[in-house]
Image (cartoon, rainbow, N blue to C red; front, side, top):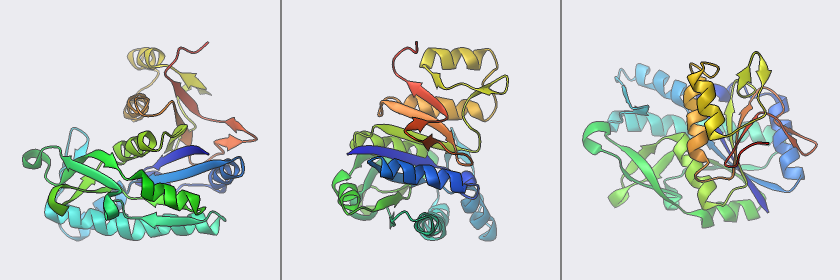
Length: 254
């Protein structure tokens, strides 16, 4: 079976369209297995505000105290995960919520407890558990929460979690879902890019602002997956066997 790992940030989850879910169903009909990894940044921020807990970022990672970790777990493993599972099931896609720290589905070590607190870097993925769900015809919906040393729970970057899952499952495709169709130049979608071409577009200013971290994450993900796509959560990304969005390739494009 071919496998696709889908990563969706919390800010995009609210904007997922019927077209997006139809593309998911088309993948399944065409013999793909899907694993979903989600974030929940905006919802975590809102929860921290309610709890009157301050939060900061260093190098793109949320500094995670025990209070921040409690909020992150509450949001990610609770409301966000359940909401996404319900959305999938309402669209006719059998899904199951997966708390990734359970059974060490995601394992991680501290990056720097002194600087970042309870933030981890994924070191292993228990693919056997994920494969059991897939074999049962269920789509696992994973939280970016990992089991750390001595049973500690660690907050991990959702992009890194998706990349690690894609690598462990030898996924054919990794999809990074955004609120845009892909990389655009003069208003037109660029269907495929290599690392060199991407860096040229960054240097020339064609890729700018919030798209820069997205494409850099996509390029990094090529280390663990052969095909990495930036796709829209608002439009179809797969129809009739054809992919839409920007595909990042290891090989030079022709």
